[in-house]
Amino acid sequence: MPQVDRGFLRRLADWRADGVPVSTVYLDVDGRRSPRKQDVLTRAEVLVGRLRAEADGLERRAKRSVAGDAQRITTFLDGLDRGRTRGVAMFSCSSAGWWEEVRVHRSLPDRARVAPHAYVLPLEALVQTYESFCTSLVDREKARIFLARMGDIQEEEDLVDVVPGQHDQGGWSQARFARHIEEHTAQHLKRVAERLLRVFERRTFDHLILAGPEELVPEFERGLHDYLRRRVLARINLPMTASPDLVLERSLAIEEALELERERGTVERLVAESAAGRGAVVGLEPVLEALNEARVETLVVPFGLFADGVQCEHCGRLDVSGGRCPTCGHAMHRVPDVVEASVEVALSQDAAIETLTFHNEDPDAGFHDIGAILRY
Image 1 (spheres, one colour):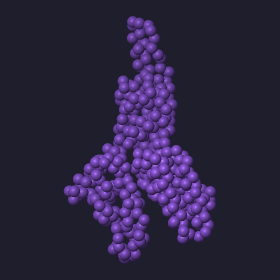
Image 2 (cartoon, rainbow, N blue to C red):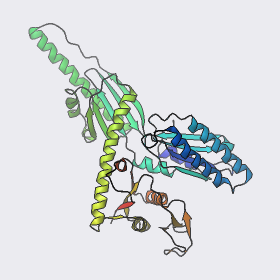
Image 3 (cartoon, rainbow, N blue to C red):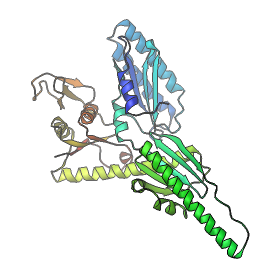
Image 4 (cartoon, rainbow, N blue to C red):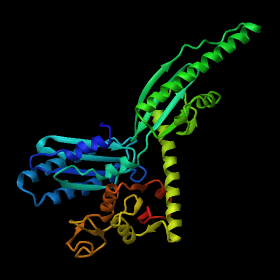
């Protein structure tokens, strides 16, 4: 699987075939919403049908290529083992023999596009908001360092020190030997902390999870550089023999709890400031107006929200309806989804995107409209 970052997305978006379109399909395969695989395949059939419909007006070679894309996507999804995957993106140009698949541990909205290039906007929004996690697993003799991002995990370092074991001599000799062991342990933890800092300097991460014996983790934390201590998110118990899958499972559970807490905080701030008439707006029309004025700091979008709308091809203005652009006077054209268009505009303005995925799984959450926290 490719590493999904901005460089990868740029390469995807820049790929072109000689006059033949690229078919893109995003599919939500989250087992919490679609426990039966057949439910996922039924939605996939609808998306593949959209590809064929979009290709109807194309010339014969392009239409044949899209038909091949549709078949390739269907075959791939038939054999998909979801596992921890919650969202999948597929990019295909069968006439050029090109295929890319991306699996992520976050839900992706169902989308289908036929265009001259790969449609990467949903992944761009995901990459912008996804945070990276480092899990440092230590005991008195060993250390393992894991980096996790986008639902993927890599074991970065493996550090083993020779720390003397206990022995059965008593008296003064035993006490002296115990001090000797503690000194070696302290040196071991210091070396692990130095190694962890080098990892951070080479591959910056957002959050740090410390794992190991309860009596050892606080001592290890005290020896960390301030850059690292500020990133400590959780302290957990894990055996040194833990598999990468188990480390990832525990890390993802912490990540989801953090994301839920952040989403709740964002919604509370949005609702409070909007009700007070300052700093935030709720509802499609005021949000689009704020985007048109480049005043959005954070765009808040419930997962799966969809709305019709229009956009000016000349200046990019968004609106819910209208024939002529009130800004420049050019014609407004219908867009397939003005919510998605608003995400694209927000990204172009360097606004943050908060997609409410975990928050809106709570039936009592109660926020299902688009909103924006404003810069001014």
